[in-house]
Image (cartoon, rainbow, N blue to C red; front, side, top):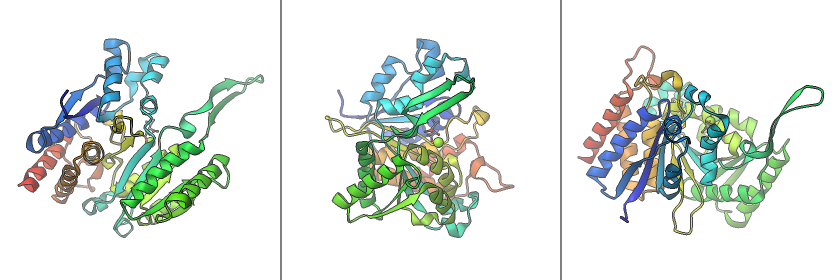
Length: 370
Ligand code: IPM
Ligand code: MG
C-alpha cells in the first residue's frame, strides 16, 4: 500500500466526460509539477457500466468509492437511461450513491468573480463582494423520506406522496458542520426553513438554535424563511456567509444562487460524509451543472465547475490548500484574460470550447507557478 491519496474518477454521461477530461489535465499538472502523492484511478459507472456488467454501479466501483480519499464525479443522466430497467436505474442513482456514503454535508460555494460579473443577470453592484457557501443537507429530508410513491385511490384518482422528515441528530450534524465552517470564515450562519408552516421546519429552527446557544455563541446566527431567502439571494446576496439549508431548499436555492457566479456551469460542489474510524472522510466532488444532454459531445461545455471542484478536493480531502489556492488563482487569471465559454460569454463575443478553457487554466498555472 502506498501512502498516496487515492482519487477515484467517474466521468459519467452527457458533458461529464468532457469536463472531467479538463479536470484530469489539471490534476495531471499538479501530480507531475507539485505532488507525486496523488493517484488517479478510473471507475466504471453509468450506462456503459450497465452494458458491460449489468450494474450501473459495478461492485468494483462501489468498493473504490468506499475506499477513495476523494471521488471526482462528472455528471449523470440523460436519454440513454430511459432504456434501462427501473430497478437498475434506482440502484445507480446519484441520490443513492450520496446516501450510501452518508454524504450529508454538501458545499456549494457561490463566489462572484469580478471578471464574469457581466455574465450574470444581476447588476455588478449587487455582485460586489459576494462570497458565501451554501451548505445543503444531502442525505435526508424530502428526497429520501418515507412513505413515498404514487398510489391509486379507490375513486380512481392518483395520489403522489413524499415525506419531509428530519431527526434532531440529522439537523444537528449538518448545523455543527455549518457553525464550524463559519468559524473559518466570517462567522455568520443563515439557517433556512419554513418554520411558519412546517413542523419539520420548526424542529430545524429549534435544533439549530439550541446547538448554537450551547456551543457556538461566538457565531452570528440568523433564521430566514425560504421564500424570503429566495428574494434575498437576488436582492442582496452579499449578506450571506454560510447559508444552511435542508436538502430540497438547498437544491432549489443553489440553482438560483448560481446566477451570481454568472452560470450554473461555474459552480463546483463538495459532498462530505462523517469522519470514519480511520480518520478518513468520504468525499465526492462534482460540478453542479449535471449531464446537459442538449450540448453533450459538442466540446462547448464550461469545465470550470469541474476544475473548481478539483480545487475543493485539494482543500478538503487531499491536504493541499496551497494547490487549491493556486488553482483558484489560475481560474481567475484565465478569466481575467478574457477567455469565456459560451455560457459566460457576453453577447457578440467569441466563446471558446471546453478544451481551450482547460488549456487557458493550464497556461495560467504555468505562469503563476513561474
Ligand atoms: C443537484 C441535482 C440533483 C439533486 C439531482 C440531479 C438528483 O439537482 O445536485 O442539485 O437534486 O440533488
Ligand atoms: Mg439541483
